[in-house]
Length: 491
Image (cartoon, rainbow, N blue to C red; front, side, top):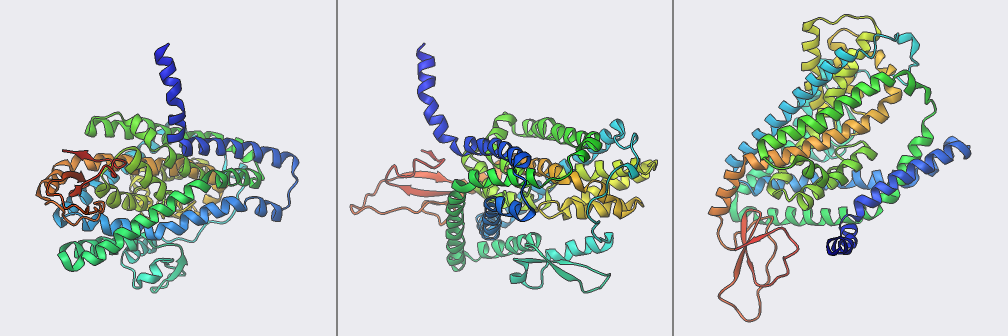
């Protein structure tokens, strides 16, 4: 009885602590209900549908707005706080983890689609084509990936990226943040100012303040998120015109979703448990808000502000790891996209009665892995790289139009898996880098200038003795209990 009473007293604190997650879940359910009702009884015109979904559009614009300052400030402060040799090791571990999980995802997708054979019972002529296939050349796409890593104009990289068109050596520019180029620049820039010592301290302080201001803006956006999600979900339900296509492609969708479910609920948690030796499902619950956001907005880059918040506040991952690993992961780690592209390519081959040999399957696995790295973290970017995979095995690029009708839904699930893979990556890299991080902590001095250390205030009566608090790699003087809200360990 006493336990039950105590549990009941704790409920308000639990609700208060997880109000954002609970309100987001409620917003999703409300959005589905409103969307179904309005679709059934509303009879909205195309213009009315745009007006109806406007609050959801505002949420997407807010999240996209914050991506640029977040990537720049977090990468520079994260890298500058680490020794160059340590940052190299952390980066290598992150890339190896991303590559391994992507390869596993591709292999899992191939095994499932070859076993279930969702396209054998159908013909391509039986499925309605929607939209048009993007014009992509495999070599040009790979060269564009390298071009985007080294943008010729840093300001232009903030809103455009290189894209070769009509086989011109000098390509055109398409709209969208060149996240890969910005990450490469911020990586080098962070290493340089980290080596500059006191001369680089002004820049470190600036970017640290920029990061802090950005995260406070994110907190403001979080208050609006439930409202935006209601109309985002409802607007998408109203927008879909042909629900019959879901029945025709039901087995294909089931294959993709089952592969994503296996990868996210078995493979990734198993990797995390083997390396970190902690409960992976408790870790995943800490990322619930980010996963739900990814499911609703289908963009791993736009989800990045929420991913930072969950990893650092809920799962207590070291900020030196999250600020370095998460922006890179949101750009190159696409487990869900790689799995989806492998399944979709073989599904389209089955629709065309094409028997794939071992060499073609290996080609699909290699191409899907490489293409997923080049996929931008924006909605439905996988369709562009899908053309690369189809071209690699000799399938017509226009067959991508067979699956466009259901891609908007599958895109949400694979984005959620991408974000979960990024999150588990921070835990794995933190565990593998534990010795290096501890070594940095030991060599830190009292009052060391650290971009993650909290500012300290000097009391009027100049006390000679003060407690020292470990805060993400440095020691700060603690003369009050005002930092008790942070995750610190005092000694």
